[in-house]
Every structure is written in structure tokens, then in C-alpha cells.
Length: 67
Image: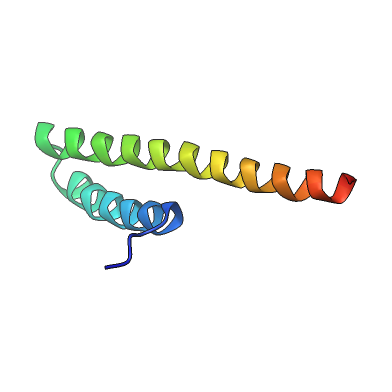
């Protein structure tokens, strides 16, 4: 089985957040609030990881062009 890369995980996390947020919008309960917050934290974590990956790739490409 092929493991998802960070971009795929980020996309899936957004879809999960979207579903949780739909429930939050219709039922303003404690559970739906915490679930929505959990999904947002996951998106933040994955976003930071993707930013690091992009920066590393950019630095590798940029440094090759200098030589």
C-alpha cells in the first residue's frame, strides 16, 4: 500500500474538518465544538509539516542553481 504524502493527508484532514464543521453549524454542542477544534489542530500540524517540506525542497533547488 502506498502511504499518503503530506499534501494528501492535508487534503483528507480538510475534508474531515469540513464534515465536522457542518455538524457544528447545525448542532452547537460541546462534542461538535471539540471535534471541530481537533480537526483544525490537525490541519495546522500538517500545514506546518508541508511548509517545512516545501522550504527544504526550495532550498535544495536554490542551492543547486548557485553552483
